[in-house]
Amino acid sequence: MKLLFVFPILLGLLIPYQTVNSPDENSPLAVVNYKWSRARRNIAAEETKDTAPAPAMIPQNRNFARNARINDPPGVRDPNQDTLDGRSAAMEKSVQESRTAKPKPQDRFAFKIKVQNSEKKAIEIVFWEYQFQDPSDASIVARRQFLCGVNIPGEKSKELEGFSVSGPNVVNVSTLADKSENPFKQKVLINRVEYADGSIWQRKGWSLADVKASYERVLREQWLPGMCKGL
Image (cartoon, rainbow, N blue to C red):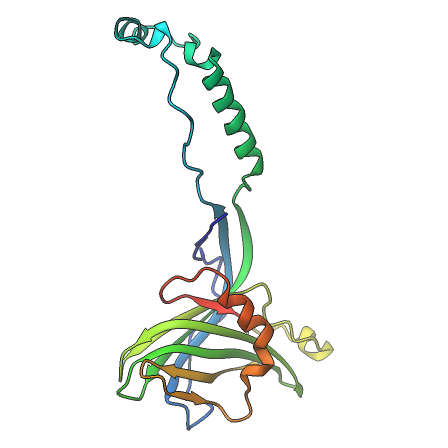
């Protein structure tokens, strides 16, 4: 079953864009601004193609009878439904419908950043993370990491957007008591950049091995151009 992602209908902006400089001055990809918000995403199954066999050539399907049925009043049963082929097709349709999951809106969190490529060579892959830090305890940090398959030409900017089931769930009593609009410290880090020419830049202190399991998982999933996947 193919998953079709309908990108989010924003339910309300929680914080505005924040303009920042990249926390890592050595990063070739500068973070221009960023924001997060609640979002809703639909997961729908691809419509099953109609593979029903051609109707049997019963007398009612011959030209004269078929043309006569055009003028039948509403509610008159189609004689094809009473043939072996017709009954088989109806049963198959019923089975397929029972197996097809109905699309349901799911609440998610959307993380959007705008980045600027400071190099002259094109970027194809970006690993980045959105961090939430408790202002009263710097050791409490929530990270939302993403992998994006992109095409960022040299010296150009681009918006990247990732989705997660988790938001800024930094748990601390003092933070929970803070009713301000933005009770968390936030920042975005570029962890790894892979260029079209095969070269790589990686942030000191970050390791691809730390996300190996989730990295291998998302590589097995379906990708679309410009898509970001949560790690």
